[in-house]
Image (cartoon, rainbow, N blue to C red; front, side, top):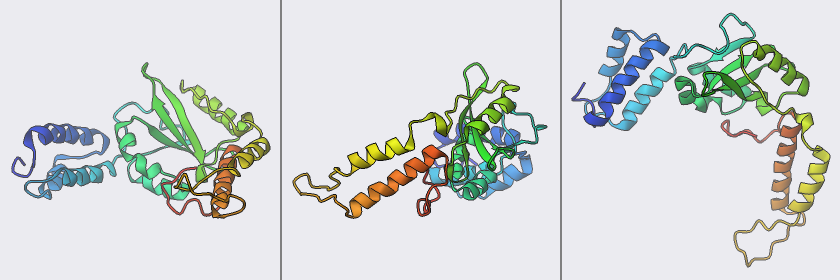
Length: 238
């Protein structure tokens, strides 16, 4: 193993810690770990070790800390490992990029199947006193929860001591007022790269682009599906 590691003083302690960690969260036994290490090339670079680690992270099956929501609660399913990428594709959000956070439990995710209006992904973050709070909740295409759904979620999580302080879409300013304000402001924007170049914003492509972003903003405020065409890149969020 020493012959395979590129930077022994730096990489070996991290490798040992990682191996001990995956024994807990990935159900990794000695045979599986030895087999995966044997596949590393001599003089392995940091990038090789990163790919090796990501392969194991995709095999995560549990947290290294007690789960904030008991497994007996059928309304909430823990999302770890390869399920992050799968559900991220289904919901068209960036959940698949949260692999490291879920692996270390710095942010953990649950699928709330009983959410009014469709299943939702609930992101929980730890508090310094050992508790948890709701960092965010989104339905498919990053739609926000309705006020009634927020109340149901608060009731469902309060029995586990999980705090939630989400603002429902209705609690924000009027979308119609926002449209009038932002649309009026956007019509005077100079979107050119050259400060000295005169820019006509009276109906050109730049103004159309601003209006498309405005539609996306207002859809998020209303908790509505984001207009088609904004999620060609699955990692983009509204």
